[in-house]
Length: 144
Image (cartoon, rainbow, N blue to C red; front, side):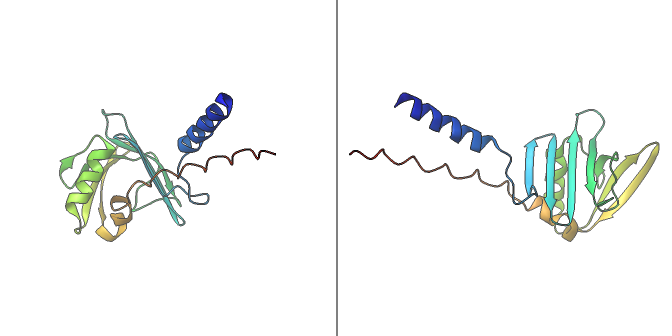
């Protein structure tokens, strides 16, 4: 009986530790203050910050998103410096429903991209998904 309870606990822990998926697409996953993964069927964005240089665009799909490319570093929203993904999201939320200007570094160049609120709304409005429901307990053995 003890083994059954332990096995059930391990199965539950494994299920809860899995990334939240919808088909093959992550919908939204804020891993830490410094990491974000977001996807919908047509776009993908991964951001990472190391607290020193800004927020690195680790992935955009397809090709670019809002003019950002893989390797770009977001250094400010409007004229407010950002170093953490959580700061970027807070700035976007407080700017909504207005367009924002993302200040980027691309190699040695500095760029400013105008991003409409409708474009970033699905990222800032997304709530991290709830963990999956635990599995049903196993049926008691039939006595006979």
